[in-house]
Image 1 (cartoon, rainbow over the protein chains, first blue to last red):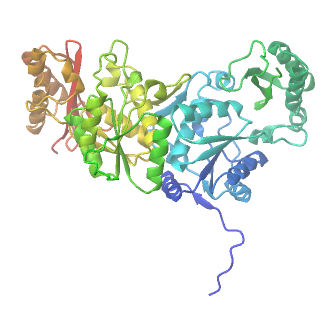
Image 2 (image 1 turned 90 degrees about the horizontal axis):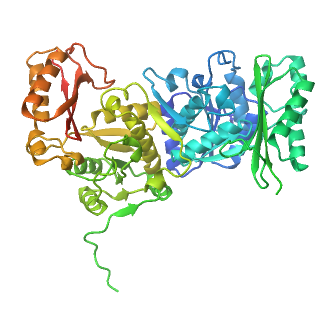
Image 3 (image 1 turned 30 degrees about the horizontal axis):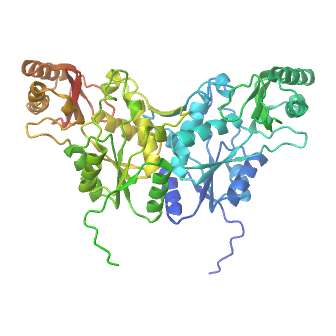
Amino acid sequence: MRILPTVNPTVECISDPAAMQQRAEAVRRQGRRIAVVPTMGALHEGHCSLIRLARTRSDLVITTIFVNPSQFGEGEDFDRYPRDLGRDTVLAQKAGTDIVFVPSREGMYPGGFVTAVDVEKITGVLEGAIRPGHFRGVTTVVAKLFNITRPDLAVFGQKDAQQVAVIRRMVQDLNFGVEIVVAPIVREADGLAMSSRNAYLTPVQRAEAPVLYRSLRSAAALVLAGERDPEAIRRSMIHQISRASSGSVQYVSLADEGNLEEFRVLPGGARVLISLAVKFGSTRLIDNCVLDVPS
Amino acid sequence: MRILPTVNPTVECISDPAAMQQRAEAVRRQGRRIAVVPTMGALHEGHCSLIRLARTRSDLVITTIFVNPSQFGEGEDFDRYPRDLGRDTVLAQKAGTDIVFVPSREGMYPGGFVTAVDVEKITGVLEGAIRPGHFRGVTTVVAKLFNITRPDLAVFGQKDAQQVAVIRRMVQDLNFGVEIVVAPIVREADGLAMSSRNAYLTPVQRAEAPVLYRSLRSAAALVLAGERDPEAIRRSMIHQISRASSGSVQYVSLADEGNLEEFRVLPGGARVLISLAVKFGSTRLIDNCVLDVPS
């Protein structure tokens, strides 16, 4: 019998939470560092950059793929959210994943499930104001995923800036002992932030959408030029977006990066998170940048 | 230099959550089993029995002592709850504790704390109905303590039967991977369940209080004699307590041990949790027993 060398070993796929937890626990007891990258699948270059970053910081990379129903609201796109596990698995592996954790809905939320993790205050603004219950779904599933995969660190994308702030808060408040690593936004050549939801855009909407990034760059330029009035910057961004697209602006925010409180004046030395949500038809796009206000 | 044998080594005391977590993590990476016994101090023989049980099931026993403000309601006894850390530490050590974890209030709830763990449904009845917010405080602090002490198992007392059901639910729903071990109620010679709150009783109330246990035994006798009507049993218990004491009955419950739903008829083969809360002046006492209904 000849044993062929495995050139492209198939990635380890685990769907049972208890099996995943046992596996992670065993790795941890060997003193090896675990990184987890929680995703909802439909992987693009943005996700792959998270996985590659996780790879450089750990001995074992677990990518989780779970379209979490509890973070979608009524009338949101849970049913049509893109799913392609075969493709995702290959991309995850190529980017450096050791284990893909793909639980079932019933595996994550069996009958009788009644528990939630709630972060207050910073979940009531921005995305949280428009998508009630969204962050409760996110923090609950992330708490579960942390307990199941026992990570030393977890990598999230800056694209979901509020999610990062909320999860940091949860980790600190509940003493998870997981380091939160944030990877920069990956953009298409024309500046549009990568998102699984970009696939919903019509060709015309897709051509218009890069104005979101251009408006963030304009805002940054205004701040660097000395503008300290958030309202003036917000107006200018909305004007730019409205002029160049059919998008309907849901919010433009200039807030403290940590507690997400809106600035009334931009103080020198502050870190400001400039973020926005714009709807193109039924497709919501978000984008943001973080800026140090010159003193 | 002579090294004297340490006959009574002082127990290891840790107050910083991060230091405790680091210590627990190191122990866990050695492959040693950790048991945690969460308490609010004011230790009595009931707590000591939990610690002794933890000792037999693990390599390292951590007893936590923290009078958790968030599980006390308005007008409850947070301020007058008995505190004696010196005595508690000695008792915890004698019972087999390796590490006493005694965080400060600020260490557990630093400024900006906004997160909670919520178990729904089974927290709305019995103790939860009378003490709104109590279990939210319990689950949040226990989630924190689990993350800080990284236990393989945790020991709780059957005395707080609903707390056991709520924590089991939380552990299962959030995949904590912690085994919940329940220790039987420890009673005084006259049957009164041990409780730190017994110290509040006047001599007359103290003499009356054992009727709670007698009423539970009477209820069990009725069930064993064939009574299947919870209402009849409840009436009989209330009558017995009222006749023999000044206590004011807050509830008498005959419920499913797991989901805490009240039985309308006691079905053969079911496990019924008979529980009660009685107020003696401003002091609330609770007690319970679990019974297998004969088929």
